Image (cartoon, rainbow, N blue to C red):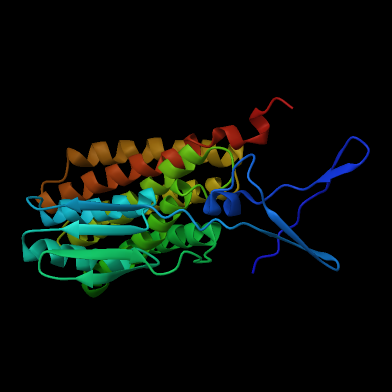
Amino acid sequence: MVAIKRKVIQIANSTQLISLPRKWTLKYGVKKGDELEITENGTSLKVSTEKTPHFEEITVDVSGLTPRLADRFLARAYQKGYDKITIKFDKPELMIAIQNKVPELLGFEIMEQNNKSCVIQTISSKLEVDFDSLLRKAFIITLDMADSCLEALENNDKKTLENLHFKDFDVNKFCYFCLRFINKGQHEGFGNYIVYYLIELLEDVGDEYKALAQLLIKTESKKEIIKILGNTNRAFKMGYEFFYKPEKSKATEAMELYNKTKADIENSFGKLKNSNDLKALATMNYILKLVYHYPTMRLDTLKELSGV
């Protein structure tokens, strides 16, 4: 049970109102004109509805798709807010891809399965998870992936680089849930579209650091790569700090570092010859382009730009 405070609104001389929590009204489909039951119990009032939570379900046939596309479909269906997903398939590798994806879908389990179809469903419509805490966890794990890449490269720690993909599992899980939370209408606040996009980017950043780790195992020009990776990681961290505490100086510093690192990458492309070095440069360049959006897309939150 979550305690929620609401201010009393005075209407005319006699009527007093309080607002209903948006998350609750969306969950039970309460709309203007609906009747609610109010039960008085001493100092408490119980507000209830006979409606049950809105339950979205979908049935699809992924036969003919590649395992990767089946994986992507399931992730998107979960993010869109479906509560029950029935999937038909024609090959065992499609089922394997689906089985491997379900653990990344927080609150979901495979409820039924045979050699032609499976049913994946939420096991709790009342899953109490804090959106802000999960999003911050996703950021922190991705930042840790960035630091681990750099430290492992500096120490020639190939084992850490080989196993970095395990951390991306949690990044995916938390990002997917946050995207689902927004699509279900459970996240209140201005700028949801931008927040949604930035969460999508964060999941991509995790994927890129996972891919980078495998390339760093085989790089030859480590000194050059270490310098660029260090600045790429710093740019990501600045974007994270700006996301949670927007300041004009942070945005300016992040942009200066972005431009410097981008120039260093372009110069290195002309010097490095090893294919894995070049692939690592390309991956870091892409990470830089992704994290660039964290300070630039939330400039409207700066008090210094409000004109007040």
